[in-house]
Length: 222
Image (cartoon, rainbow, N blue to C red; front, top):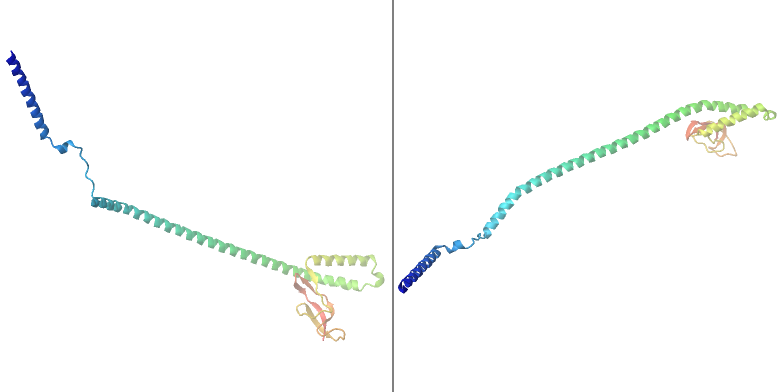
């Protein structure tokens, strides 16, 4: 019995040894590199440079495209600015031309009005002359009569309205002869007045807004 038990223990030991030997051989057959985690190989400097260059080349067309559209946009903006400037200059010229036209029209209208007023005044002045001649012939004893007083008032009213319109009598007697204002019809000698001085006013002259309506008819000292 003792001998059988020893044989049994011996067989089990042999089995265990064989199992350990098989496991050892199996472990030796495995590749140690396969048991370790694989690491990605690091990129070399040349590969990095090539990748960067390829990226720059890929980005370059986008930059060129953006530059093309920017130039096109700037050109369009410049054209619009030039157009605005051109239209602004044209508008300023039109406004200046219109202002000149307005001033010219106003001047022409004023001149036409002055010409028309001058024509009317020329027709009224003989009436004024007749008033003055008639009042000058009134005898002294009749100057206070109601009729003469009424004529005087009408004459003064007429002269006041003419003055309000800008009609002024020309100063003549005792002034230096002025061919722009006076019309010399005769020459006289005088010891009191200098040569070239108006000695007598034969017919009163008038101006309208500094424009001569009728020259004063005068005699001048020779």
